Image (cartoon, rainbow, N blue to C red; front, side):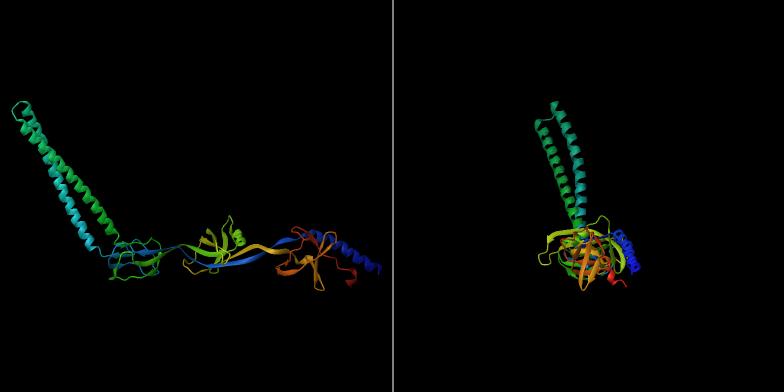
Amino acid sequence: MGKLIACLWAGLVIVGPAWAQEGLHVQAARKQVVLSGYTRGRAVQTLACEVAGKVTQVNYDVGQVVGQKPFLEIDPTFVDFQIEQAQWTLEKLTVARSRGAAHLAYLQKEYQRVDTLHQGSVAPLSKLEGAAEELDQARLALQTTEVEIKAIKTQLKELKERRGRHAVAAPAGWVIVERHVEPGEIVAAGTPLARAADFTKLVVPLFVSGEELAALRQDEPLAVKVDGQPGRARINWVNPQFDERTRKLAVELVLVGHTGEARGGLLTELVLEVAAQGLMLPKKAVVNRYDNPYVVLRGGRTIPIVILGESGEDLLIAEQAALPPGTVLETAPVPAASAR
């Protein structure tokens, strides 16, 4: 019997230091949450016409990537006629300006000749005044022609601008996702014709709590799974407006370095670790006898606990004032009587 007690005591002496070396601590409870959403294009644009007319050509269908050509073209026949007429008018005024400039130069010489004769008492004053009047009228006519040229140039710019708006453009590299027009249709100004989306960058809208938003705010890109494949994402924007119904905030993630398929509807999942109510402690620090679990503090004091759940090698317990985070725990020694 003496040998048996000695062996048991020796066993307890050996196990004691081992518990202290394990460093069993109480920690603030944390839990893992999975946020999920579906990808979509970074931006969507409605394509509408600014002028009325007949659609002559549609260059892209749904699902096609926009290139250098415009989305569609509207018949520019009438505006082309106006541009041609304005160009002919400009050419006519240019010729009139040259003719007026030549006539003005002639009248200037004529005025100088009459002025010389008048000073020599050869030409009467009335002839000098008549030459001066003709010279002034020629200057005014040339100025009028210059003004008309400027006006027709402005008109020509306006017509060319209107001509350019007969082609409804979409941003290059975007994808047509909706189309509501066919060649031959007559469209009115302001009519929505199609929708184009930018899938060069994929975004994922989420609705998160304050704790989840805090976990999302990281310096490095977040690890995500996009359609089952690993990827990276970062916060694109956070809407500070609080949703009273869901009590959450709208957040948009943008995928970075995504090499998979660029389209909407790809399931994107993100695992976060957030703060939770309660405490976490190692399973090996808990003694559960007769469904009365407890832990042992340094010095031997036992503290009863209420187990709420488990995660891996840890247990989630209810808040306990005697177990603040950081408390060092030991495992209670097995009574000698139970060792056989």
